[in-house]
Length: 159
Image (cartoon, rainbow, N blue to C red; front, side, top):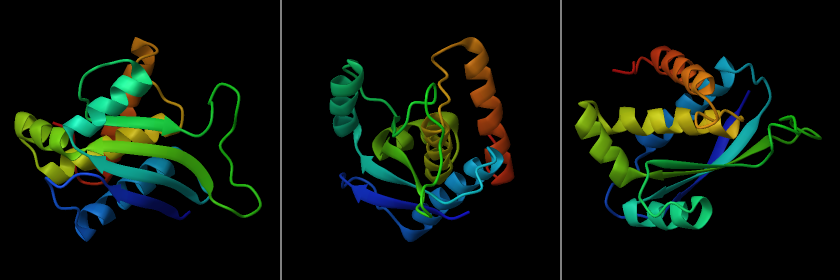
């Protein structure tokens, strides 16, 4: 399985390094592998700041506040199956991460910025695969377990 993604950087508060990009590729690949996805996948990641993600959150979720990550799946898990067609990678959707919020949360939780961004990537890839912790307490628990397993496999345990 190959994981590819396009990166757009719409913020200037934090550097986007090759190391961060590679960490997110590993985080996405481990998440997909844990979920049994054995075909090529692609998605996009946009880095923004709190102001940028607040605007998106207001526009798409009617919530006028900054958040850490937004996920925009390309399929409806209720009615569609994720699949690669005609040898092309499956397009999972789009992820938007506020690097500003990630830095705030890393400080709050006492771990590295890189670990927080990797966690947000794992969380968001699970959303692209159809998981939604806001649907029910059971789904929230399941997502937390999956996140914990992936972060453990990456050597970035959740505190």
